[in-house]
Image 1 (tube, one colour):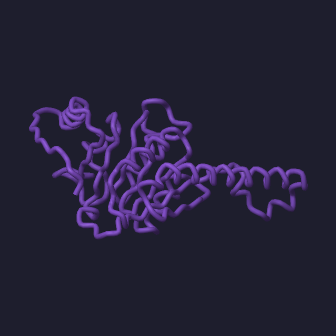
Image 2: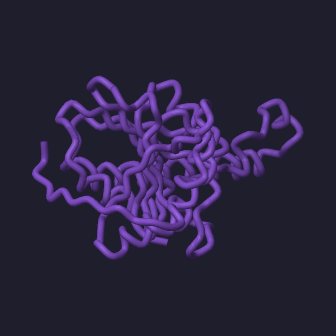
Length: 223
């Protein structure tokens, strides 16, 4: 394994505050927790302490779900990026972690398109000029998606080999969770918020991943 300095600490008080306080005091780079505590439900719902740490931590948090405790290689990582500075920060952090050489990484970008879900049957009622505008918007959306994917891969290629990538269209949370399930993902990685998120607050996509992911998740922090 990777050499590390191991220390221990026993604290008394509010668990969430003690964990975050200790992390701040020690200047740690990553908090790793089980997704649920001893009183957790048997479902994949994240426990209140883990949720609180994810929401208020100033450093990335990795929450490990039970089925990941004995995962056999290769480890499958799904990195979801929207091209924001927060996704870039998460990618930079992800690239700093030492993974086994056979770890499989997939980079995913989900296009939220105002025009992509317009049914083709409606086009008969739209004049050629509007059709052309819709086609141009779709083309630009996919070109931007390609640039986002390429940039993410450039940040991650030094630590991962044979990176795969996917572009989906739809609701980001829904698509991320669906892709993760279809790929048998072990860890979902996202930024703390997206391009439209409020500063200092965990974004809605990251919150949904935290609430509904069936696998472990790592949420980067730079908010």
